[in-house]
Length: 114
Image (cartoon, rainbow, N blue to C red; front, side, top):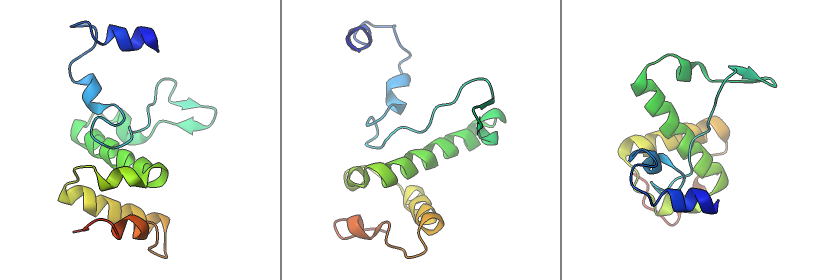
């Protein structure tokens, strides 16, 4: 951890865009990471990630980031800069995960949800 933290201070060690997508950089948790093989211990890489469609991959990553944050650290959503599309995605995630509509209820009290 110390080597990683110090190495990041050296210019050119990591790609400039890499830290932008890491957990907490945008106020949200990071999306899941996958590698080869495509199936490992019955875990399969989502099809969208192998299509080569960069826009679909970007949307999938954002959705997964929002979903992880909602499920694990909903308090972070209060401070995150969310777009209209993010709010729409969160409502879709809520309807998929909770038929009662209570999943977002707690932090809705503290936030103005468009």
